[in-house]
View 1: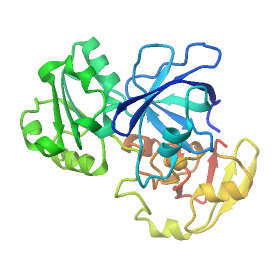
View 2: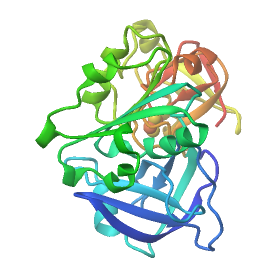
View 3: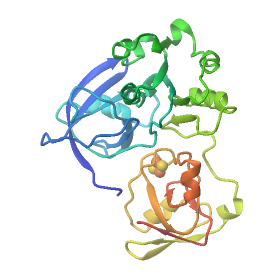
View 4: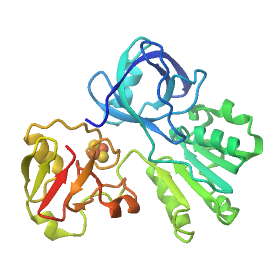
Length: 319
Ligand code: FES
């Protein structure tokens, strides 16, 4: 398991919008929880053992954590469990905070949120304010009633454009990108359709312009192009115990590690959440996730073992 889990108690739950509930999480002994940098999230371990990722945003108590959970119909059950079973007093655990969506310095920032994707952008807006950075937010949702945080955002006036789809249609990305100042950075969080539309708009912009956060598999996730690697078995050395396990052709590292009885913390098992992130001490991973950046892939010292394999006959992992 990566790091020690933090014990939590649910201090309150508050309805923020239709199907969106805020949970205030605190340390049971009242001590201050570690602060996340803007864009950070936690891996929350639910009473059932499910693990889900939620972005943190600031609330009334700076020593507590605040998460907003949308009930997802047809989801994998994590959001329903939180909505239906988690009440003030419920004990939970979490790992983190971790930040895979950090805010970089820029003269201009364009924030684009779809639905509950607004949550990681809230602390970024606060940080942009503190830094004196020019910023704009375009926030789309199904309807005004389903869009959380509208009262908090109203104080920013014309810098925030709220676009309830049932009143105004979808976000006008052409207008947003048409007015984008040179050198601006774009931060987008929302459903895959919105992310893909924003990615298309950013194709012609300088590399590093677009930063996205998603918690579901990207369309390009899946087996990589190296079919030879997919066909070959390889060895994984678990450095902490010195054991070696054989990973069969076509299987991810996780499968073999689990069969060897080694406990690894996982959540999505699709290479999208980062919960299974593991240090690579020797060998070259074949990355099949949709989360690591190009730089992280090139560095080769991390891999998401739930989906990834090896390009070398032997991998030594920090497990
Ligand atoms: Fe989510 Fe591996 S468990 S990336």
